[in-house]
Amino acid sequence: MSRLFESTSIKNMVLANRFVRSATWEGMAADDGSVTPRLIDVQIQLARGGVGLIISGHAYVSKEGQAGNWQLGAYSDVLVPGLKTMADAIHGAGGRVALQLAHAGSRAAFHISGLEPMGPSIMDAESGTAGREMTVKDIREVTEAFARAAARARTAGFDAVQIHAAHGYLLSQYLSPFFNKRKDDYGGGIENRARLLAEVVKRVREATGPEFPILVKINSEDFLPGGLTVADMVRTAAFLEGAGVDGIEMSGGTFLSGKNTPSRTGKPGPGNPEAYYEAAARTYKSEISIPLMLVGGIRTIETAEKLVDSGTADYISLSRPLIREPDLVNRWKSGDRRPARCVSDSGCFTPGFKGKGVFCVVEDREKQRAAKSHPAE
Image (cartoon, rainbow, N blue to C red; front, side):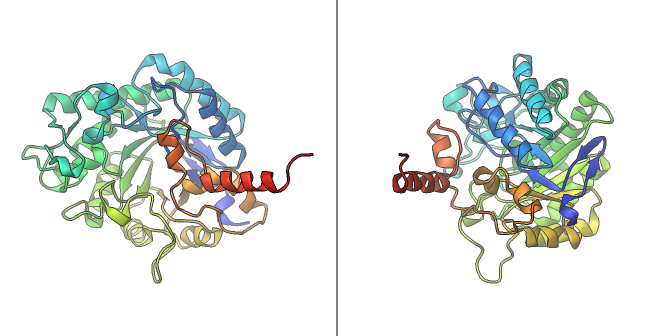
């Protein structure tokens, strides 16, 4: 049997296979960030579809850190019962789940919270990250917000947490010299730029205990002039290794990275690998021992097998393919090795922005055409 389908463990979390549902904004939470039945249904489909570890859509840890509408929240104890219902449902369907903890930083949604966005430095409005520069007091408060949210995840029965430090959100902004122009202990060299992330990991560990799995998502690089580099990423991963992080998921890019955003459209050009960050993953694995989850562009089981068999990645993370095919892992396991049906057009997010939740619009159009061609008698 393919190594993709062997059972593994991350600390005390036993996973049925090496497939991970990478955190995906579903656009299905209630206005206050609470769990809804529709959101739970999506997670159940993923668990029944064979995904080894489901990582929730990014859950904001404090109100000023909310990224957008209908986003899952973890900022209040009031939300814990709903989160528990979701975790219990996933476990009932045979799955494992990590709650992704996030703060949007200077990309936060002022129009929702009414609170001024904040980040490591003041950026020009053209960058799309305008907001005030955080004080040391702000930094302390955000660190505590991550710790409290992690404690809520454990109380709610989640199997792990993932700290979101990628894609140009707050912790990613601190890591990146493109966004971080600070002159204090949180700016300058990568040791200082990684300080906030290291402090968040430390407080999350204190809040959840020594045996609770802590994962971190980071960029391979920012694909921005003067942004985070692969060398910076490896140094950051080394800090995280020393801090006792249990797994790292590698992604890349920001909302400002042009064609190299986290959700690239279309197929890779000639000579480019199917997995966007394969080269960076090889560099990571040559120096870091923390298990690596690799996301970005993987659409075939052959590529997934190659990445794992070669030691380039320990786990295969998928996002958009599982929007169209939540049962993709089971399909591949059954012997149907056809590529994922996802066409990578990112049209799935358009209905989410309209309050309809994220779904594959290509699949929806195909079903509508089929219904018109074969109307029920």
